[in-house]
Each structure stands twice: as structure tokens, then as C-alpha cells.
Image 1 (cartoon, rainbow over the protein chains, first blue to last red):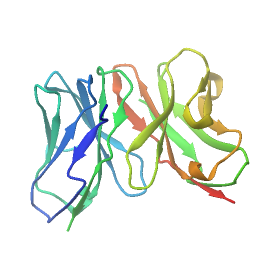
Image 2: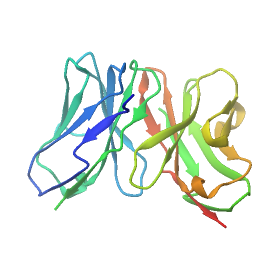
Image 3: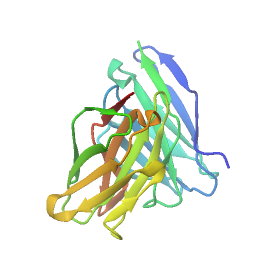
Image 4: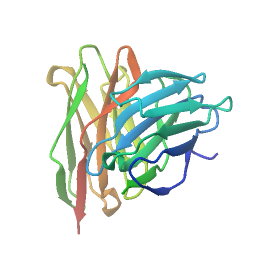
Length: 112
Length: 114
């Protein structure tokens, strides 16, 4: 049984560009949450998707947006990249919005 | 509002010694509490969780944690450290109308010395 998968593993962008990160949840999971983990810090909640809708959102600007597809996979989009957006982006899936979350390996984004 | 404080950003333990990682939380309602471990260049792996059942929770790899409401604590312990326990450990809380939103502490880096 494949766990949570994320692509790409690493990404380098320049300021002002846009980026899309992708996540496939564990089999049987219908909820996807996204977190940003800056170097040396704990993960920060960005938002959660369930039934193709954003259900909860953390304190992130509108530059951060997402989408969930009918097969429960999800994308995180970040527009107008800033240097401060450099981080490890983690996707977590769960079999319901309030169930235990299981994390993928993350996508490491570097903004130059 | 919920928050998590992990005391000690770095902990060094000898192989075979007790591992004790401290976590205190603030929550206006009974919370769910979690410990995750992160190995270098990897995502987070769930060690254990408290969801209002037994206050002493046993997890994987010999770890356990005790929920103490009076102390608002959820400290993680392991009786005997192994070299493979070297990693970063995160305590997290979720509560109330935002059950799906995990609030993480800053993490504790564990170094195990021979």
C-alpha cells in the first residue's frame, strides 16, 4: 500500500514566479492537508481540502491556493513567490477531516 | 486558541539511557495530542496520539506519552535510547472546531551518543 506521495521532491524558483506542488493521498483517504515547514521550525498549517473544497485555512496569504481533484489528489499553488516561501512543503492525508494525518516526504522549495 | 511549547530545542542522550522530551499545550477544550518524528530529509511519521481515552499512550518503537490535564503536559519517554532514535521530534495539538488543523511545536532535536 503506497503511502502519501508528493512531487516534485525538489524545486528551485526565482522571486515572482509561480509554483505548483502535487500530492497523492494514501489509498482510502479523502482528506488532504498542506503544511509549510521553514528551516528549523515546526510545520505550519496552510489549508485542508475535503470533498474538493477548502475546509480550513491557516494564516497564509491568498497567494497560497489549492485544489482537490475527484480522485482526492491535491495541488498547492503559490503565486508571486517570495524568498520567505523557501521551505519544505508537506502534504498529509487522512480518512476524514478529523482523523489522524499521515505525512508525505515533502517538496523542498528554494526561492532565489 | 491552541498552542504547543516544547522545552529544549536539542537533547543529547547516551545510548541505553532514558529519553524524555517535554511538551506543554494550551487549549480551551480537551485536545487531541500527537507526537511525530522526522528523520533527516523525510516527512513526519506518527509515533503516538492521545484522543481522550487512556491517559498513558503507547506508540511505536518503544515510545510512550502520558497526558496530564492538571499540568497541561504530554511528555514523550522511552526507557532506553537507541542510535536509531536520533531524529527531530514534534508535539502537535488539535482541538474543537478545528480538529483537522494540527498546531505543531518548534521541535526537539535528539542526538544519541555511544
